[in-house]
Image (cartoon, rainbow, N blue to C red; front, side, top):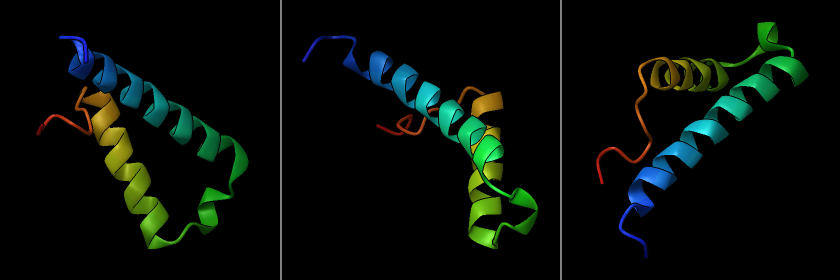
Length: 58
C-alpha cells in the first residue's frame, strides 16, 4: 500500500460520514428517530466538527 494510505483513508471516511449525515437529514423523519439513530448522528456530528477520523486509533 502507498505510504499515505492512512491519510487518504481518513479523508475518504470523513467525506463518507458527512454524506451519510446529510442523506439521513434529507431522507429520514429524524423527529421520530430512535436512540440508536440519535446517538449515531450525535457521534458523527462530533467527529465531523472536531475533524476526528474513525481510524485515528490505528
